[in-house]
Amino acid sequence: MKQTNCATLVELDAERVFVEANFLRGLPKFNVVGLASGDIQESKERVKSALVYSGFKLPTGAVTINLSPSDIPKNGSHFDLSIALIIALFQDENIDLSDFYIFGELGLDGNLKDTRAIFPIILSLKGQNKIKKVILPVDSVKKVSRIPNLEIYAVSSLSEAIDFLRGIIKIEPEKETSLNVNKLKINDSEYFFTRNFNLDFKEVLGQTVAKRASLIAVAGFHNIIYEGSPGSGKSMIAKRLQYILPPVNGEELLQIARFEALEGREPTFSAVRPFRSPHHTASRGSIFGGGSRVAKVGEVSMANSGILFFDELPHFPQQILEALREPLQDYAILVSRVQTKIKYPANFLFVGAMNPCPCGYLMSKYHSCRCSESEIKKYRNALSEPFWDRIDLYVAMQEVSADDQPTISSENLYSNILIAFEKQIKRGQKNLNGRLSDSELEEFVKLDRSALETLRTASEKFNLSLRSINKIKKVARTIADLNHNSYFNDEVSKGHILEALSYRRRK
Image (cartoon, rainbow, N blue to C red):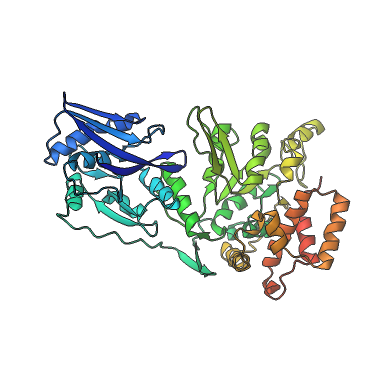
């Protein structure tokens, strides 16, 4: 009995599937067993047509294809090529297919097509160190060749794949495709970034405090909320943060492309991190992931490594805001369903924007607030104290003035972010400041005597929680990293703590 390797996606991860074939005497029959979905069952007709069109006679008798292990549901038309090859080469005892993973959807004429599942499956298998050689359609090469240390053999048709495996033709492995982005090498690791600022901070007039807080938030991946009157520039600033986010490493870049493919989009392999902005009417399932039987990726996971932006923050349902506390704390989300439980990554930079009251003019010098005290209280109570405790920076937007001028560009901001990013990586940090664990906090955030005394006094005066104290330390660490002179003194000083405290929300 001959077998080859394919794979299927189980939620986000790929599971290896052995494709086996057996031929028995009897009436002509073609069966596929092993929890195969409808698109795999349909492959029987595609495979039969492709074999005939490619000059092969269909086997007489009963053909049984088994997809093992049989307790894992399989889906995807990329099984076509594996099934066709194992039938076509069944008599060739000297051909060993076990070295290859084989993917590709067949047309009725035997030509091969790419599917959106091929790239995320191969990327997942590579991350598990389960794959070295792969045979796939020519159309898949552009994406898959971005994955390093992989032997890729590209074929355009079923007959070409058969000739290659029989040694009739020779196919050279495809070369790894380099990424067309800027590179930064730190501690023998490569990081990728771009300087294409599609939305630029030079278009934002005034708001010097908000811009400074935005710089700190992005440089250390600190969660931030902007509060201000309508038209003050909250959303305008938030949408520009995407283009000044820190560089990504190779793994992050491929994971971003993987989520794009899972969503049905063509992977861009851009160093621009994702930006997701669900509307406040979005369902809980669409934000956190859901599905009645099979869990699906939500916005919090699609924003992984990038930004999750909630505009009109208090208008989001209370249950969504409270459920958001889990990924804000653990950087992951657990989705539980009747037949499955899966943990999705959710390491995003949270950005929120809100008005100070329902009408928006509570903080305005030029407009009168029309809201009653009870309306204001209800509006502001939409965000609980445990939720606020997970926010690093709070910005009260300045009033818009006709005299406001541009103060800084995205290019200038990004130059500072690259400096702070390099300092964090050179210190040996695996995570940016805002994502440091408790043990990493002790190792990488050193406060001098005056900073310790200032933080102790603030903790007693404002009754700060341990989480709040740690967040102040992390923000202060980023502020110190943005100081160009901190190469000579890596300690966090009193001034850094005071600035970090200035971005805490006053109750």
